[in-house]
Length: 246
Length: 260
Ligand SMILES: Nc1ncnc2c1ncn2[C@@H]1O[C@H](COP(=O)(O)OP(=O)(O)O)[C@@H](O)[C@H]1O
Ligand SMILES: [Mg+2]
Image (cartoon, rainbow over all chains, first blue to last red):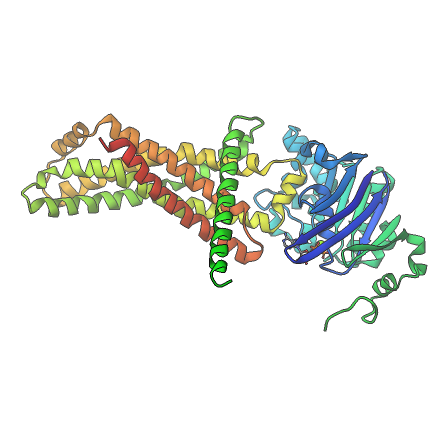
């Protein structure tokens, strides 16, 4: 359903993506791993049209994205941003119900629905009327997650969904993402550094390094990938082909 | 090389400037075009009117009051040298309505409104809230820019009208309390002296200044660099650009309205 061919993106002299080819099938859950600053977030933003790639094509349902009206296209997408990106001028429930309120859903119904969605990410109903700045970092992340899944989008992108959460809450979120894919049939791309997330959420995994997807494979093959980069990453070794500056 | 490189740099700079002007013009036209294309975000528009119009009243009133009073004192002192101190009501009226009312309100709006628009939108940009807005199928031009620019265009003339009146009353207060003018003739002189064109020019300036002030806030906010430093730069740039644009527009409008 999502096809990337030869995607490149540089910021000045900094080449971040250097020819990305990727296919994500409908109803599949892909996890992208890779060191920080390797361009994982940039990759998702290119697909959403938030960043214009320098070259390459992005096709969704075999249609070039530059030919599809953007608002119509994005109404099928949900995105959890790495920093949450909640609107701090709106209370939490209006953040979660943002799309429904814009779609003229009656406010009372939208609010009830938002409170339900908040409950699914482990936030109590009393958080609905708070402003994002009144929540802790982990709670903001969960509220943002609620906003991403509230309208039951066909395609959901999760940018580090469990970063900053305690292990139990991370487990809840991992299950939630898995559910969205298995039960609702959503297509998901998840960026994470959390190996538990990788193993719970992924159908397939890919490692982004040096502007390229170095390895793509099924979760069952992760431990026998035969790829030195993947091995170093999943075992968190400081020695290996990926240089860690010290 | 030594000869070419400054020229090349100048050319580079000029091209950058032209590209910037081009992008800003497109942005301006885009903002205007959203004013006639539904859907409109009613709540956002109402909030902008409250923030930009209603809540600016105190600062506008105080600025006008103090300036009108000081103006009366100065005109009295200056006029005294020619035995022309009787013209205080007329000169206060014309000075306030034609120039000081719109310009001071415009500059106060640049200080109060442009800065807050730029800082808010820049922070939204830096924290990916603009990206989130787009992802939720909402056009930032329509959701953020249009309400603010519309409020600037429609509220600032009203603020200027209030400023003009309070400024004239500031002059009246000082003239009657401190300079020995009699209240009723002072007000009669003021009203008889002002012409419709004075008031039309005052309100037109208000609309133009309000448009410029809010537009600059949005433009610099949306084009903010990254991080806290980006927000700071955007805010500073917006206020400076708005103030300079207001003063330049004032000269052009004064020329257009009053040069015979
Ligand atoms: N808007 C931008 N302007 C300039 N550089 C950027 C921008 N966005 C990302 N980058 C750069 O791109 C690289 C990849 O960033 P990112 O995709 O956020 O990394 P990560 O893989 O940790 O998500 C970084 O070096 C970052 O500095
Ligand atoms: Mg990232």
